[in-house]
Image (cartoon, rainbow over all chains, first blue to last red; front, side):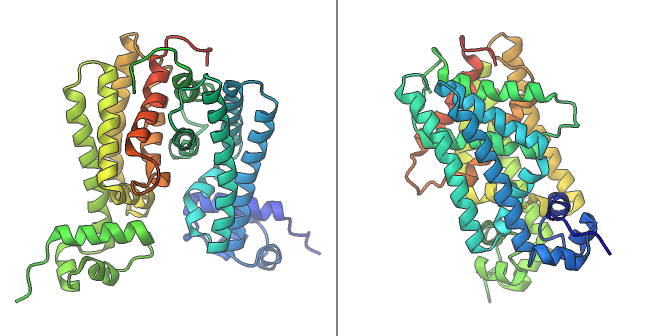
Length: 196
Length: 196
């Protein structure tokens, strides 16, 4: 008797294939092949590609949000909370780059209901970062003119990583994290500088 | 006799449609309709959708690169050059948001040869920004650990704009430009701050 199809195998194969070929470029047949599972085994877990893409997107954003929320909760100052969010997001990206590639590039292919649900989770993530920036401003620590704009700027840098950074390339992860931190935190806490 | 089909009309319609529906979601028939031109008029200018997408992508990146290069060339210090690049990129985005949406989201749909050519132009843009960051570091003005990482960080913020900023929304362009400048310049020029 064939072994049971594990949902982890299906998801791992689908993430690889969606990241490499795009959502439109991958069929359920190819996902089954990439995952090393049977088509019935695939369909047992996911009714269609949309359900699979939704699972991946929700898993990605929920895990980033969870890790960042926990790390921020135990940090003492807004600077440390923001630093913790950047570090956790970057760590998740290093460990699961394809998850964030799929979330960032393919989420627009989701059906309406699923897109709304992912949007809700991303709103929570935005709110977490915006809250930290607002607290830092209110404490007189961050030069934040507009917490929403600042939060989207932070998210742009974090979500932009998958477009250019590859852990097997020439740039050391530590350099990347440090340089990003300079941009995203030190500008806010700078004591001097020209008026923007 | 029908008036001549103008390439500007074709491009304007295609940009709107690609930005709204995505490259895969737009047919040549729909592009002709959106542009208010005949199908023969459309095909007179562009053999297929790939040629049209390439034209839009090349036009977008070439115009941004040209505006930023000119502005940077007449600025005196690395700070002023970087400030000029940010201002010109942002101004292009405000004037032509759909051009950058199409460039950022749909360029992966280009055929191989076209994708390589767009990649070359983007490399020039990266080189412009990286050169400014390197000059600033060498002059002791910027805290740049790695010019490549810093340049990609700047580009992530600029290219990320289309994902969240809409000129007809509640956020004033001036606030956005000022907040982005705080992140992208003041962190580099900060005299103090924790080590990254």
